[in-house]
Length: 184
Image (cartoon, rainbow, N blue to C red):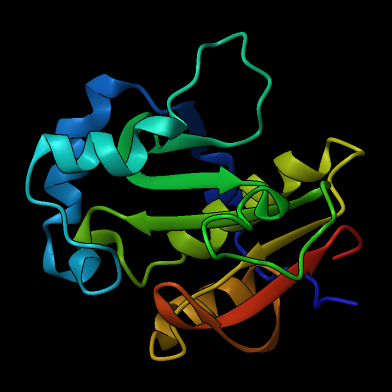
């Protein structure tokens, strides 16, 4: 059983999620080049890099595929990026070969605005998005995979109700696999 989330309900209420659009790519490129993001995300130096890496996460409004990107809004202003994927679909990419549950979801995210890091927004947005995911009865579990060397991210996930399951090798190097179950 996962620990109960300890995020700020008032802060969660100020957050919204808007589906990623190609028109967001210049903002993403700007954020991805900022030192506090670039330290943990693959380097991208052109809009073509963003398209190549994240373009598959742009979906039509009527597409029900859970794999998509999201712009996180705080009081209506874009402040972060979040992407949701189905780990069981990514075996061919070298990821999550032991995961076969089609109801599991994976999340990756970052706060684009450095001034907002360390203010509880990360854990609040993760908690709010997990609540959104678990509204679908088909979703069984959510996983995240921060670098073991990123204590700020690990603490944010713990505050959002995730528990560590151990370090695993991934195509990007070691990752601390963390889970939040439906009952958290």
